[in-house]
Each structure stands twice: as structure tokens, then as C-alpha cells.
Image 1 (cartoon, one colour):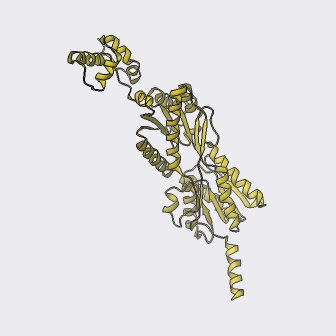
Image 2: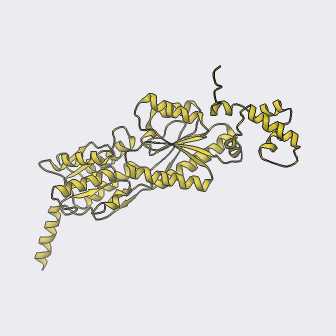
Image 3: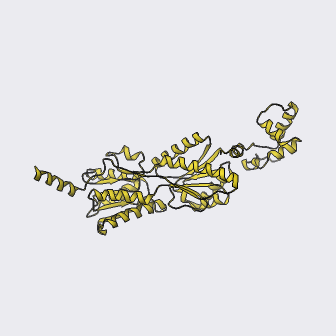
Amino acid sequence: MPAPTKPSRRSRGSVTIEDVARAAGVSAMTVSRVINKEPNVRDETRQNVLETIERMNYSPNTAARNLAAGEATHIGLLYSNPSAAYLSQFLVGALEAARESGCHLVIEACSSTSEAEQREVARRFAQADAEGVILPPPLSESVPILSELEAAGTPIVTVAMGQLHPNALNVRIDDYAAAKEMTEYLIGLGHKRIGLIRGHPDQIASAERERGFLAAVTEAGLRKSDIAVVQGYFTFRSGLEAAEKLLGRSNPPTAIFASNDDMAAAVVSVAHRRGLDVPRDLSVAGFDDTAPATTVWPELTTIRQPVSAMAAAALNLVLADLKIRRRVRSGSSQEVILDHELVIRESSGPPPAEKAQRGELQETRA
């Protein structure tokens, strides 16, 4: 005779408090009192209810009770990010917000690019106790995951998605404006030969940053031959390869803008290996203001993206949406755009020719 199978979380969750009450021959209120260990329940009735709960494998849905009170207990966070620094800041922000709100995060990694595997991970989340799911980049743009969660009716919050997904919530900064501001800053220093290292080609934010960069150089009237754009993938190694391509040109850029800090740190490393001084010979700028921005020498000029605040905003957004869904049975699309900041540090300065001209001018005045 085969051994009995253990009920799954889903099968356990399918038994309701009303089912237990009918099987035990008591009211649902009595079952609730027993579960919550309230007094005024006779010992034989309490024992009967507890035995019925055990026999039927009933699992009290504390998440549903808290949601009815306006609070969710379990929020899923599905992640896969090539930048450990970005992910670290994001998790810190999400965990701190979860602690303050009293909910719990169900965190799972999904590093596979297989559509089937991504769908399976999303399906597990939809079948678990997670009332909503937060998707930081790059999974915020995964069609298999988004479609699977949407089909299950699970509230979704995408983070750093360049455009609002239908029936979803989104938290981001204005990547276009941020990249344009950084490029205008470099041009303002006197740089006319500028290189850009793109982010991962599958992410909308990468395209938005490139669009902001190109808008700034076009408005400044810089020559196309002096502008170089090479592909990166938000990883340190891809930054090394991109920097070698840019600095190996016959007329290399005097400034390189990398689409995240990991790649910008790689540019600094390549510059040092080639005997270039940063920023005297080459200015370097990054994006995000994560740990690498202040652990490399010189420290990076970068765009501060409030990663931790974005994670906290995503959590609060899904909790607010869950309260709305509890009342009206449906959520709504909503987007929160947080402010970015241009942070100027030691890795940027005027181009070499500009410095030489300034030195000659000072000698003439002397």
C-alpha cells in the first residue's frame, strides 16, 4: 500500500474555516476562537475542533486575516541582477520597509533566461502565500514572469521599468533625464570626445540612458565621429571589455560615461593599467551611486539612483494596492517616479587640452 502523500500548501489552503466548522458540528466563530486560543470554549469542544483541524489538514490563513485588517503578511521578491552592489542596496531597502510595515518578504532568485523556467518560478509564487510580487530589474521586464503572475491575478510591482506595464505598478527614476544631465555636465567641463558604455540591451532603462546621452551630444552640436557608443551588460567584466575598445581607438574619448557604477569602476581599472591618470587624462562617470562608486580610486562622479528608496516605495505601493483590491476586487496601474541626483566626485574634470590651455593662461597672467 503506497504511503499517503503529504498535502501541498495549496491543498491545505483549499480547506476553509467553514469546512472545519461543518465537520466538527460547531460554528465558524467557535473554530476561530479555538485557533486564537480564546477562552469560553468547553474543553471537549476545543479538543473536537483541534482534532478536526488536524484530520482535515486545515492551515489558518493568517495572511488573509491580516489582509482583511489592511495588512499583508507575505510579499514575494523575485530577483536576478548582475550587479551585486545594486542588489544589495535593493534588498536592504525592501527588508527595512517590510520590517516597518510588519509584513514578511518571500525572496527567491531566478537567474535563468529560459522562458519555461521563468514561468515555473512565477507559477510557484502565484501558488504560494505571497499576496503580491516585487520585480526589480531585469526580471521587471520578463514577459513570461509578468504574464504568468498577471494570469494568476497576483499584484505586480515592477522596478526601474522604462514604461508602465498594463495592470501593474511601477517605481523608477527618469533615466533619460538623468543620463542627459550627466552628459551635459561632461560637455560643460569641455569634453568633446565622449564615449558611452550601454547597459544590458534587454532593459528599457539602458535604451533610455542612451537616448538621454545622444540627446545631449546632439543639442551640443558635437561631431558624430567624436562620439563612441559600445555595448556593456552592467557587469564589471563587460565594462573592462568596453573600456578597452574605447581607449584603443585612434582618437580615444577624453570622457567615458558608463551606464552603471560596476562598468565605470572597470573603466578606471583599465585607465590605470594603461598608465592614464583619472581625471587628468580621462574623466569617468557612472550611474546608480552604489558601493563601487566610493570604493574605487578616485571616487566616481555618478547619478544617484535611490535604489533602497525605490525598493521601499515598491513594497509600500503593493501593500496599498492590496488594500484597494480588498475593497473593490481590482487594482490599478500606477507609477511612482523618484528623484535622481548628479553626484560630482574626483573622477571627472576638464579634458587634457582644456587643462593645458588653462595652465598657459595662468602663466601668461603671471
